[in-house]
Image (tube, rainbow, N blue to C red):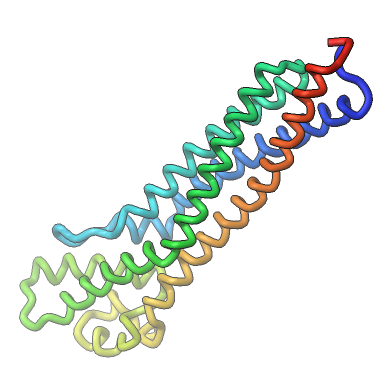
Length: 233
């Protein structure tokens, strides 16, 4: 026999929240893998010009999310099994894991908020350096070809051209690199839009997970205490 009454309700509530937590871990893992292989982002972050290359901080964050999602799925399974088996040891371990994950999520959220403009800022700096190189007079043919390739990736991915003065670039480069119908679209704005959308998506998922984690910590401690005090355990 196991726990009875309200504690039994807590047991099944904890199981349900753990199942949601497990699903949330799968969601984070899926979103992270999608961000890692998103065509727009991959196209921009994998180009390079000689020694210059786009910032790697975004992919580092994505790889951390992949690890977090995998850990959450393992911890969620541990919580489900501990709740069904009414194991104080498993529930205690689960609670400690939740506290650590919650602390990491809060720290990551604070860091992400404070550095939310970093990735897009670094990407705009990289684009500007390539753009300015393209504007140099008498650029040798090999470097001109390399610059044109990088700019073409940016322009085709974001449907933009230049830093708000794209017509001057269009006059120097071929229409294959910067078609005339994109010259009025600022690439800086497009870069901001691309990474801002992804950051908001990550923030929404993290907020949902944080709420689930708070309920799980409460339920796991209540159930653990109920199991210890139960006369039938």
